[in-house]
Length: 72
Image (cartoon, rainbow, N blue to C red; front, side, top):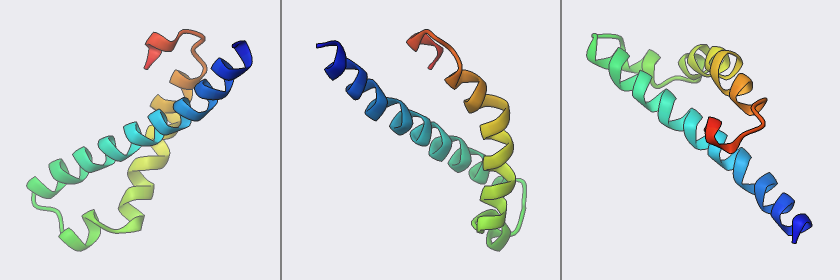
């Protein structure tokens, strides 16, 4: 049962992190769009990289180092 649990956790955690990244990027796109930024820039891959990479390094990576599942 421990091996099954470990496999399920390995499948669940990356999916959770990806979901957080998508939701956070969508929220930032909406907020920046409401402040009058160009839609071409807000929905570009460049914008996603400018938001996603720092968010990953500052928020998601440190959260992934937590030993407790309640960190998510």
